[in-house]
Length: 399
Ligand code: MG
Image 1 (cartoon, rainbow, N blue to C red):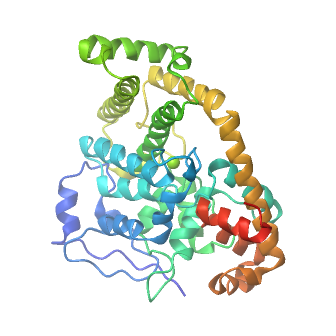
Image 2: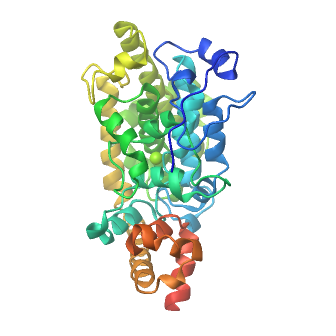
Image 3: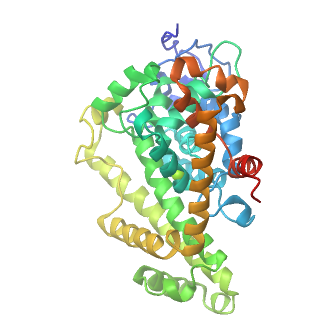
């Protein structure tokens, strides 16, 4: 049986030195809350550095390199994948956390782990699997990420999962629910349901959105689906274009088109990152929280929550997101990729449910405890785009 081991004393440890550099309302190492399966201290790595390292070394993390962000993996080598997206989210989160004296290693863990539960073929894959699992507990990528780090990863001799700290598990939870079969997490879920978001977790969420809005614009332009003229309909793009032109003068005017695009996107991104940092810093200064609990105890969604953009930036990002929905995510070529992905997932699902013996043995062994549907869902969710497509081809003979 798994029991929660109490947090070890942080006297004279790397955790103690690290905590001295953090703001009092940051995720302090001494509040990491222990782990679900045994808890040996490390002589020179902090508890959150070890969480981060465990995520980087797990199989699910490597597979993100072959999972669709927007463009299906084989469409081109330069587009973002879930792996590069996660690295970008981690980089931005680290920068802002460092400047605010929040816990960078903790935020990095959350950023690197935030998309672990995604299916192949992006959101189309998730929607398809959720539809197929409707009567069997559903499918949701955040629940799946939690399931992956606590049950599905298999790298350690004494337990399943990555044995992350209780704080990281709570930070990963975007809402206070997991699958019914993941009862190990019930206590952490209940705690999460009573609390507001941890500052670092809220920042990672914002950085996730900020990263994909900007990199989807760039990938959309690189793919030729978006044209620079299309972007001119956005006043924020026109303003940014003029600002970069004014600042860089001749160098900008004579630059190649793609280089201009990157310069403008970099400007936009820098502006939104700085806005998030400055607004949050000002809010923290006004609130002066004495510690983390003071913020968490205000309960979920408290109005005066400090991590946010200015009203102007919120509106700008909303406009960009709507533009991307209209002009990129629903573009026929992208829709076609999505529909094909959904079809692949549907066929695989019914095939494995009907013939579970086609799945690897270690998946079949789980059927008695969680049922065939959850096992099939776990197996499919863990696949990369190319593996799922290969399975599909081998089952249907289609090329
Ligand atoms: Mg993401």
